[in-house]
Amino acid sequence: MKIELPGIDDQQLMVFLASQKEAMATMNKNLDAQVMRAPLVVDENAYPRTHLLREREGWEPPHKDLVAAYFQQFKDLFGYGSDKEMAELLGLSSDRRVREFKQGKSPVPYGVWRRFLVMTGRAPQEVIPVLGVVVSK
Image 1 (tube, rainbow, N blue to C red):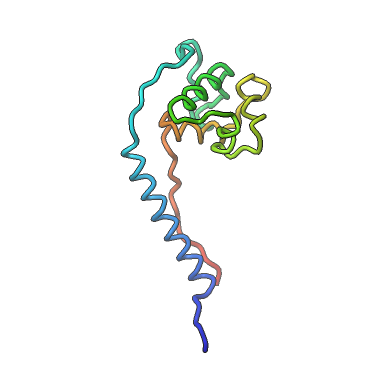
Image 2 (cartoon, one colour):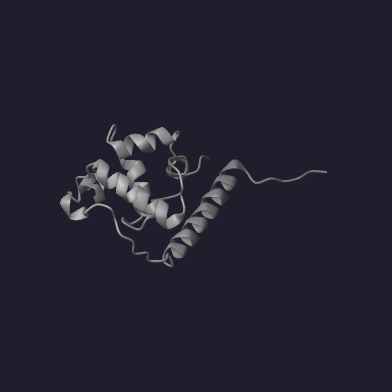
């Protein structure tokens, strides 16, 4: 018995198309995200808003007080009880990193912070245009 399989190029294209459909479904689902109003333990107006910008717009890492306040608000709203859970959600290797961010021992990297802002609806998700699907011959 001989089983015909698509070539690598065709497989690559199938994976690309499937992942694009999955991404569009997620974006559509994001439109229905619940709006949640909750107090923040710090006055955001006392801090610059540069932590909400994109890198090319002049982003700067958030102040440690904002990191701690945003993370605590998130934990309260979504039932994340520990820094370990936050670390896993943000793709970090250790809950120690979360504590370092909250204590100001190290700044939150742009990618980690941006991911958090997108998950909380504080920043738009960036969609990168596909200029073409390139496969090898």
